[in-house]
Length: 98
Image (cartoon, rainbow, N blue to C red; front, side, top):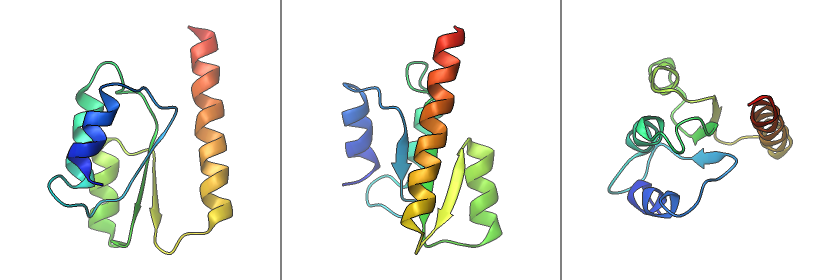
């Protein structure tokens, strides 16, 4: 529903990847991303931001906060699925090396 709901769900789950919009009520995607990166348990989970905000300032800000990728709306479903595969594979390779 929004960033606060996402954080509540993340208290009980450790996902392989997080897909987040920027524009959400109560807590936007930037604040959610900041909270995820500050959490030792989930801070390394890849985050893909999906948004209609296409300006470089938003893209750059998401990157500064630690977004792994930034997709503009409308996005290509094939591109999103390939990104998910890439980040999950990368995450599993890191886990194997630990």
